[in-house]
Amino acid sequence: MTAKMPAPVVLEGETVRLEPLTGGHVPDLFLAGGGDDEVWRWMPAPTPRTETELAEIAIRLVETPDHVPFAVILRETGRAVGWTTYIDTPGYADSIEIGWTWYGRSVWRSAVNTECKVLLIDHAFDKLGVNRVQLKTDNLNARSQEAIRRIGGVAEGTLRRQRRRADGTWRDTAYFSILDDEWPAHRARLTGLPR
Image 1 (tube, helix red, strand yellow):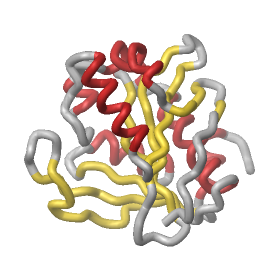
Image 2 (cartoon, rainbow, N blue to C red):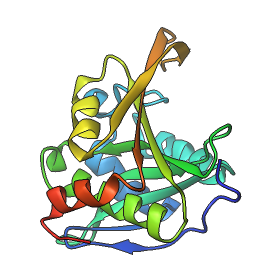
Image 3 (cartoon, helix red, strand yellow):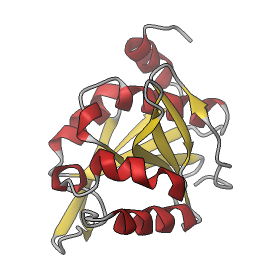
Image 4 (tube, rainbow, N blue to C red):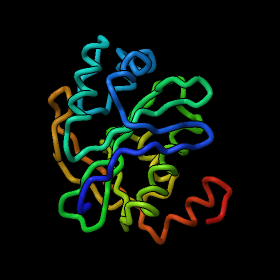
């Protein structure tokens, strides 16, 4: 696990800026994905139907000590279009997880997810000194698994009945990781830039 959760920082790319999540992002976030069952289908919370419900979820996330959430800001508009989070990984030495991620449909199949992951993974390896980045998703969430594999995630296995979904059914969780010595080749493939 990480010795200490990282301090919130701003990470800047060409398409997105990641900044510490606050209640001030909620109006944009609600416009991006509030009330959208497909956006929230695989999240560990029910679909927020109001800004107040979304604010409650965001505040709980911000106040959870083993999470460091970021608002995903589309640089072109300056508006928040989703969020993503660093999460502690108890039981894993020098590792961190990237998860609790969602984006509004308007940025699906765009550069947003790839750039977010590049920013977070670069920061994890270069600044936080971890040797392993973990990602996980519902075993039924094929779109997420495809995206994780595309950035270089290696399947590690599936934990059966790992937790309950928001609807009360059991979720099997598919685990993936990227190691520090694997990342440069994946990064170069994703960005076209050598390290």
